[in-house]
Image 1: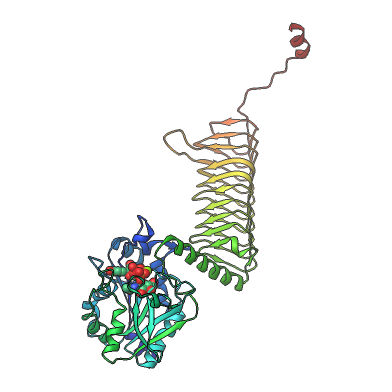
Image 2: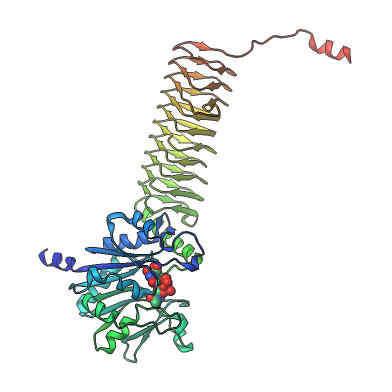
Length: 464
Ligand code: UD1
Ligand code: MG
């Protein structure tokens, strides 16, 4: 235990996140682009924390405030005023790190797929080998755009050459730099002093540190991944989509391993913070987003979109959209219904087709089966809301509240003009426009009386 703690105290992480990300062609700063519901830099910093890094330092520049607001106290921050290259970026952490003993892990904010276990293996390998630097490399089918890892005849890393600086022969090398490295912290900051910007892009390249250390006869190692699934560096939207695909597959696999049935993982999108309990079934063409939790034995049917909601055990959603809502046990929604922000359904509530609910609570066992709008309402237990009922919650200026008591029956095509209250055990006659209170146990009728004109058919056609 004691010795493990000692090692952990001496591990630092520097996350490079200052670039604008020109190739993304975006207003949003590159590292804030989300991959399955989490900004890329969030994936990177979480992996570092899960790998037991004791101190995380994020280098910010473009979008510094946005990145800082997002990561909060997960990291310390250093500001890189001008983005003069990855070596220059690491150099900004000099005041915080120079002279300290230990291992420094450098990560790029644009490699969201790296796993904590891989970072742990990399650090362990680096420390076992007692190297001054260890680069994480990967074999790419298409290495275009990445720095190529150039090895000596005896297989040792001699340097990294960027795409724009590479000779034709070097471009053929398939082993790429993942932009992830471990350094002996003191050796890193000594070598950084010697990096120049004499290259095609006029930038201070971090991988140049490897060549500098090697020329100083220091030990430089490499830890190779045999595929790109973790190594992908996201510089443009094509790579962003690829990263999302890989992350999505990982997430889906995790849920299936945990006992969730996903009928077609290729058309099922579950963001990273979603939690789903076992024996729930998720049908194709579904998107489950944000901080959503779903209980056991639930059913998420074809074409549903669910975001930031809590669904209890046994909830059934058919082809519907659920946003920032809470749904109690064994309730069902859809097809083609929409729960908007702030909807809270009790247990065994039935919301059928073409129903919109907004910022309303609906008590246990209540039903709204067809073509209904319920806004800013408080509906009690075991209420029946008939077909075509409209809660008129908006007068053009303010939103007003409607209260419907337990066991009430609201007839089809009634309009309840808010603010209004319908007492418990009461009835509202079909087609009524209710503008004032219906007391408990009463029948409210608010419509013109029916009048029948006898013999109308004959009179009508005689005239013609
Ligand atoms: C870099 C590597 C390349 C590697 C690839 C892996 C260098 C010179 N090249 O290229 O060998 O194969 O990553 O994905 O390091 N950043 C700063 N400040 C700067 C410049 C960059 O913070 O001044 C940050 C960026 O925001 C980004 C990361 O560093 O998160 C990497 O920069 P990027 O421009 O994406 O480098 P690549 O061209 O991808
Ligand atoms: Mg990059």
